Length: 310
Image 1: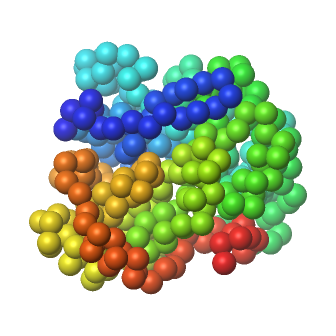
Image 2: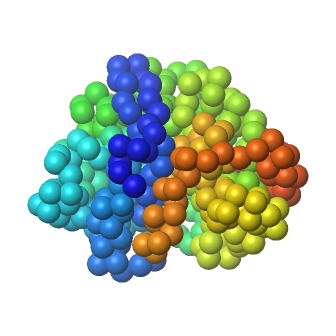
């Protein structure tokens, strides 16, 4: 699929209007750096132009190498053709550590700027290698106001075009919006037919915050669950349209007006995940999807992260 056939959304902030492809290629992986780099090059060849990374994923360096090689091979004419998202990890979620963290990210990517920089989680964690979910003793107080001022500074300095958040509830967004000079452009959250987040989607729409769905096909093996890909109702919808369960889930998200980060390093599935723009779901399909039992898969820390999802 040509990259020009992938629709875009316009992200708004106080000083910028920036276009983001609605489907992005996720790079959170347990694969080797070589596999990761090869998958990213393949993704560029297939038409992906939005790449989602994070300091925690250990994929920034591979992505930077893939971008350099894509330029060298002429797969893209300039870095500006790409939309790159990265994220601030919880151990850097302190006002004085934000600018050093984005500089480190840019150094790993070998880029002068990212398009979007997100606060990965609304918690601060003491330095160290902590297992998930974070134990109570790993957590320390999160100075959202101070961290957000440092995020705004990243944008003002041109280190990122836009700033946003990830895993923020309505309550946390409301708090952030009460003092933000530059509002968040994006909230990236777990979102798929088995965790539909209607209240959060409505809140973000009202506040002009674009929602990006991670784990749009469920979390695969990462959390040991596969509620989406094993879902019987989604399978029925797929059979009716001659589409895969993955394509049904991605199309549903696209029709909701949500942007998507999808991760597969399998060439055929990477291709199929882009083939969602030339068909549509029916009212009957929506009724079936509304019936799906809801459960959150991603559980990183204490319940207060999800303070208003109940």
